[in-house]
Length: 259
Length: 280
Image 1: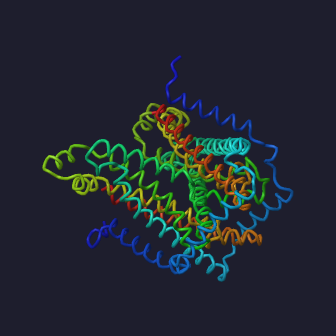
Image 2: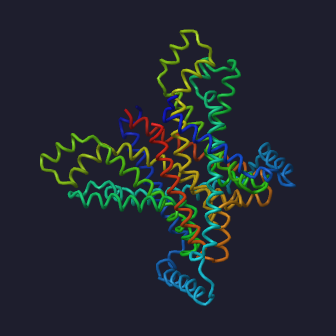
Image 3: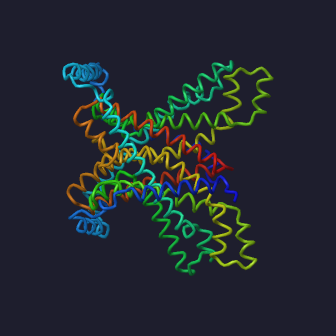
């Protein structure tokens, strides 16, 4: 019997999943002693969200804080990632050795940086620099710039070769080929991918409460400690609204870039 | 295009984004205590921190964790549990997405091609779409907080939090694959008298399953990174130990854990890349 590569992958994944189901400690997967009343509280909060004016002001402020963190982080990440992607794509160097060296070295560094989750970065940076907003922004910007640089450099490498050869044969330098050949071909992809990452970054910014920074996650934690689940749900609605509107903006952008 | 007369929508978006970014930077810089950051006191603090860490090891006589066999063994065991959580999470997410995505696709639900009856089908469609959006928009950590509030912390709690978020992502992506796929195969099956179940089985699944596999592998790479952070809250695997070591200022253990974490992520990336190549 011939098994295609695809079904082999499916079988491997299913086996791994079944093994993990078998090993997992299901005897601990029980509600806490207070669990059922906990579920009850959460559901009651869902049915009676706290839309009082005082709390709405708190929620709007928290949402604004999250927006500022997310936006400044993704902006910084873009500023770092774009030049970095030129280096990581290796297109700036003429000699094959320098190109290979820069590609391997920079890409390995990028893989290392993005393998650490933004909140671990946040914790590590907070130990060094203290728990201020700039720490949170830096913590988000570091892994996001690595992801963006990696993807942008892939975009830059995957352009068709013919226009580049035409530019080169008319005497364009590597930098000129990059500026007039590669970038015009990929800036739309870069823009739409960057926007998708903007959405992700806002979501990450919402949980910067992890290192005690303000924002939606912080208010959710506070409300949850006071068992005000009506407030928790309102904050979750604000978060959903924020993510959905950025998603809407991004999809509109992608559509108008496509035609 | 309404905007094209004055300014194109992409340019408009870019301008709005830059405006928002500059306001945001102003707010962030205003709220951070930059005087301390630039006056050099932070730098001396950092140096002090490192010096203290260094001297505490010189004086404590105990071998640092990264030289002891036992701590590496322990960290490897925790890495294994973290891997377990990530596989359990992405498997659960993929399974539920696989069951639901056909009912969440607009073209199947709205044109009577769903196995469900007409008004019921559109109801399920809207419900699923709202569910995908809600689960996707709320990050794993917040799900973890809610779950740990009601359930014992552990592998299953952590996996559940990760699974909920990724279910939303996978479900939405698969539904969009169905919506964007070539509709002719569905139509030709339809015209040759296939039932709606057969359409999904022979027309939709062959198109979506390879995509779902790829998405699962891609998301697995993301999940393995996040599992550690969810472990902080769900008290399992590397995350839990990381939190304990950090709060006891045992930075030698933190180094061991971080090394294992990075290695685990790089291995998962490599395995996922291999499997994706195999599946294509």
